[in-house]
Length: 104
Image (cartoon, rainbow, N blue to C red; front, side):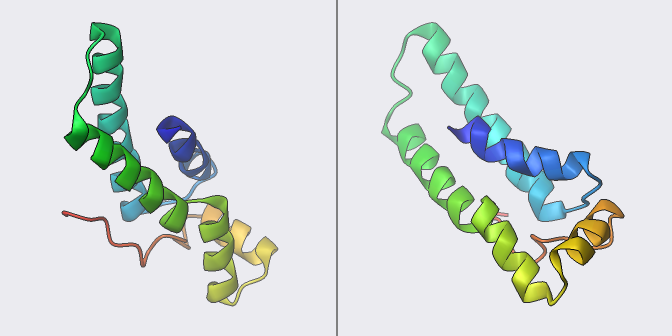
């Protein structure tokens, strides 16, 4: 599920987006996915701390990096969808500029 949360942000990077918060989000998600994958491959329970972090990360993703959050950022920008896509593709608009990554 976490990798799915990361996929849409990765796709935006593939279209030219430049976003420090997006970079941190993807990095943190990849680290968490790595921890979970290691536990699965080792056949061990990752423990309540990792479970809490996973749930928190997924909630944070839904609120700040989901398709809905992206749509809200477009509406708040005052740009049309086409203008926002063009600005994003040219690296001129960061839809996640106002997102604060926890513990950073």
